[in-house]
Image (tube, rainbow, N blue to C red):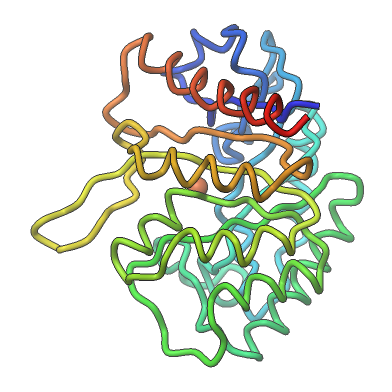
Length: 276
Ligand SMILES: [Fe+2]
């Protein structure tokens, strides 16, 4: 079956949710869980595949995730008909309720961090039950000195926990631009270790002042990311469940919204024809 394609849902793209190429949706947990909301976030919309995206599970924290937060994620997933919940391979806080770091940040890639992360993910998966959990690779502002290569760390997490991989192709591209880590090598190393795969695509810009590529979700998806996407689709095979495009600033025209999701879907159709 063809993987589903779509967007992270925003007010700005909601008018185009009936596009025939838009078959999957990613719901931002913080948008969907407002306490004054009286109906499900997706009321009035229909998608083949729904995934809830979180920023605050902090799967690499030394403490287990807050059970109230896990319950809230499951409740939002249930009321919106989701089949999956996702978050990042990083941390946003130390102790539950403690100070936040302001952005999801990768841990130092060490054995201690690996053991703690796997313990947390196994706990999360037990709590989520039938809702499949996927973990996303990050774009880094900086990298800690660790003892395990990032790709190897991710492979061990995927193999030990059996969780899904949310492959952010643009994050891998950003790390190549900023740190010289070849994105295609990273993708080829981690994708085979995943039971199931989702993908993120987005566009950022190179900040000349900081000398860094910024994953800003503010630009069209660059050609290099489309090329990596095609390679990642090939690596994923029939384990790919859904592809989501992220756009949070500098919103495109209606044609821009429709074109990118059609392009993502067109490649899946072409790949299916080639491999079938
Ligand atoms: Fe992402």
